[in-house]
Length: 431
Ligand SMILES: [Zn+2]
Image (spheres, helix red, strand yellow):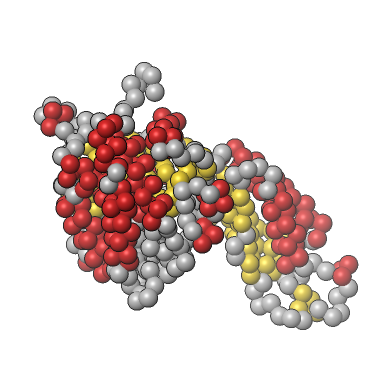
């Protein structure tokens, strides 16, 4: 198998050219001409799904769509395994084919298109494995249209929350109506859940969406964990007043309390590697040049690879917020809007990536994923691991300037093929 893998990976430049070309082809399916926007169950989304399904079929896969619109390609295991009464274990891979508004063409899509091209090469060479390969093009990850992320991967993980079916888009169309209009039956979503124990592992290839690999001069990196996150909205209530008449010592300026708190967030979240804190939204409602801000509304997003690190930081932030507000005579209301724990990548799968990188003389850089990914949802039912591919342009993503180098796609395809070729399900007694 090693020799075969080696000889097949010689085809990687052609594979990479196909991957790059297909990514551009998929970019044509957009809701907004000139921009990459493809949200759940729009005509552009349906067209992209059809194209992905056609490529899967061409690659020798059996293709199906489930009730949430995931496109699933199944590449059967070698016949000796298939003939047994037990279905072959599944090595699942994939990523999402929806995008943010005016996003990039590589986010999510690389993790679908790359494995399809690799499977096509195995199919052409008549290679089968002692496990089935399933590529899932997850229909929804970004949560743009219905403000509910990871619909596709949650359906497969069996953690789809049915309450989101009532969510409406900006035109007032509910998710369940959109599903029915696109030919899906929302009452059968639970049937999308993978059978417990059927997925031996889930691996996801994804662009890094950050600058770490770029700065390290490396095309690929192994993800350690997908960071857990907590989000809050913070309302600070001070006292508005005339900007000219109220002395500095008598003010209860809500925006200044926000500023002091924000600088503390930056300081505290700089103390531990992998911990990040962001205040992305700032508002001074009804603010005016000559009025002392009476109110400030902020968002706060804290993430870390290690849940204990995140929770400790949040406890410190809350304590400091209380101290700032009491000193300044400000009332604060901090409400948690979202929280998710981190998902750790399985050591044996990380080892698999590391060995594949070593066989291609690539140094191994391990890094956490600050962004959420489909892997996070699948972690509920299977061991997961992710391979990050370098982004150019300073690592920018969710933006039209998102870029990927063809040489990096080439190396990613080689390492992916090598990983799969050497993939072995560990003995449960000796993981
Ligand atoms: Zn993504």
